[in-house]
Amino acid sequence: MSQKDPCQKQACAIQKCLQANNYVESKCETVLQEMRKCCARYPKGRSICCSGFEKEEREREKFKATSEGIPPSPQ
Image 1 (tube, rainbow, N blue to C red):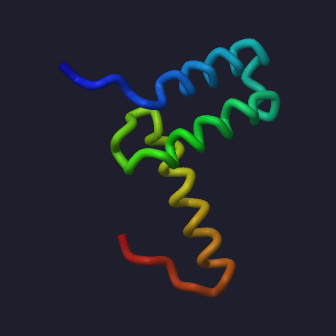
Image 2: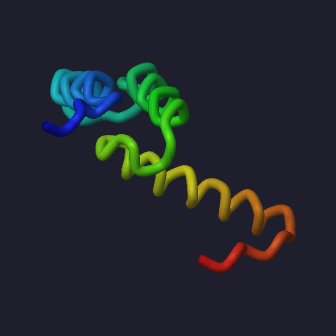
Image 3: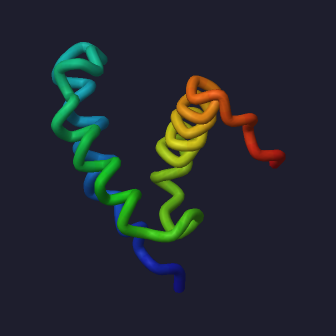
């Protein structure tokens, strides 16, 4: 039996908010931030719901590094 995804509640809240607000992300920033907080609490790969947020974080880190003149790390 597989364990329940620890961030599933937040992922469902995002979907509910987006549907209620015609998919305007800016109106759901609070629930998106809660999802980011949840994903930050768990190791990479622990929550399938966090896969998109983990990718977003990697992109943010890559952008930050290149804007500071640091070459991106090889992947």
